[in-house]
Structures are given as C-alpha cells and as structure tokens.
Image 1 (tube, one colour):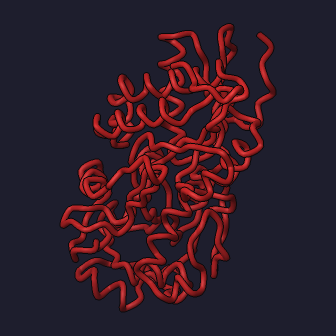
Image 2 (tube, rainbow, N blue to C red):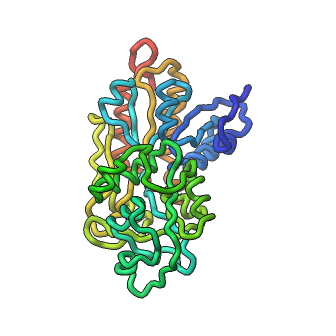
Length: 343
C-alpha cells in the first residue's frame, strides 16, 4: 500500500510502514501521547494503522471541515450550532489536565503555590519577578529567586490554549477583557512555542520561564509544576485524582453534542484546569468504510485502551458515557446516500 506523505514527525511516529488499512486523523497535541500508544497497540492487534498528525486543535478542525482526514481532534469542543453548520458530530475520548510548568532553580517540583489571580497576573505581564511580594505571600518560607518571569505560550491554534485561557477568563475579569479565550488569543506578553512540545522545550531552556502544557508532557519531560488554589479555596496538585474530581461534575448530553467544559469546577480536590479532548467526524460519510474503521478504533480504545490511558495520566470515560456516545453514533451517522451507517 502506498503511504501518504507525512506532514509531521508526529505522523511519522504513529504511522510506520503498513500493509493494511490506515485511518487518518489530525489535531490536538493534548491527547497525542495516548493516541500514539493506542495506535501502536491497535496495529498489533488488528493490522489497521493510524496516521495521526499532532498539529493543534485549530488545524484539526480545519482539516476535518475540509475532509482531508477521517477524523479531527480538538480540546475545544464545538458548540451545537457549529456542529450543525459543518455537518459534524463530536464525542469525548478521555479527560486530562493542563498544568502550569515552571523553570525555577532551587524550587522543588510541586512546591510553588499560585492563586488564580496570581496566575492571571503573571500571564498578563503584571508580575515581572519571581520574588514578587504577592507570590511570596502565598509561599511563606519558600526561597524565591530574583529571576525575571518569562512567559511561554502556544504559537499555533491550540485546544490546550483554549482550556487554559477559558480558565483565566473565568477567574480574572481583566484577562477576559484584554485577552479572552480561544484556541488562539492576543497574548499580552511572552514567546510562542509550537505544540505542547514547543512550550515544554522553551520552558526547559529559559530560566525563570512559566508555560502551560498537558500533564502527560510535563511528566514525560520531568518538568516542575505548580499547585493551584481551586474554586473551593484549596491548593491542589495536578494528578489523576484531581482530574477525576473535576470530571465528576460533567453532565454529558448527546443532545448538545457533548459540549462540556471542565475548568474551575467545584470540589475540594478538583484540579481547576481540567478538560476533555474530543473527536470530530462528519455526520454523512463520503466513504462509509473509512468512517467505520474510525468507529472501530475508538470502540476498541474505549473497551481496551483504559490501561494505557491511566498509564499516561489520562482519565477514561465512565461506561455510561461510552454507551451514550455509541448510541449517538447509531442515531446520527449516515452513509453517502443518507441511510443510517451500518455498524
């Protein structure tokens, strides 16, 4: 089988030489570590490959709209009216968290504490030194270096950015008015890195840097993360338990296209910058066979992929949500003639 040209190194990693069917996807970098693992295991078990291009949520949305891939992936859920306009359905796959990552010599991982206001003011450029009295006030006894604060953000259209800026918009009226939320915003300050990978690389390179990445990237790169004060006033660390606590508040509904945002959720142990990642496919398929292969892949992932999700610090969806998603597939998906897609 002749391989398609690979647009990114990520695609090359996920799509080795194959001699069976290959499905294509593109989008969010947030779930890339997991999709790579799922792709490898699925290929071993079924012979079907996955070419997933980790290009950011904005790119994933554009590619599925243009029908250049079998599925798109985004950490920013599309609103019901957007799904209808573009003839799409969406469904969540796993839940994870976005974490502030820092490069502060002398400060142990997880030791720094930040409040929502402090985090917003740092990214607004209002706090310029790490030993600022406002940071010191919530970190008594912690020796903070007199380093300049260097902001690192995403340069590409990103669902990770959407989750992060959605949170900042909820906790800071000034952030909401000056920068707002979205897959791309007008950053008040800082340097941009492409993908979670790029933000991680810049943050590791620059002393005094602070960025934001999906939790799996922080762990894989052994990056230092900060604790955050959540909506209930508790300082919490990012981990599977705090993501699960935030996800417990989710009210998944197929009637609104599974639109759900999990930032600033209540709960004493909830991580405040949690979120799901979503898959987008067309309601009416031009190639029913390829669409069915996509569904088979994610059906397998829901049934057998949980162990790898947990191993990479993502939270699998509850069984009742998976059943709701599969029911939506049966009710919503059509073949090229408009007949229900045979599954």
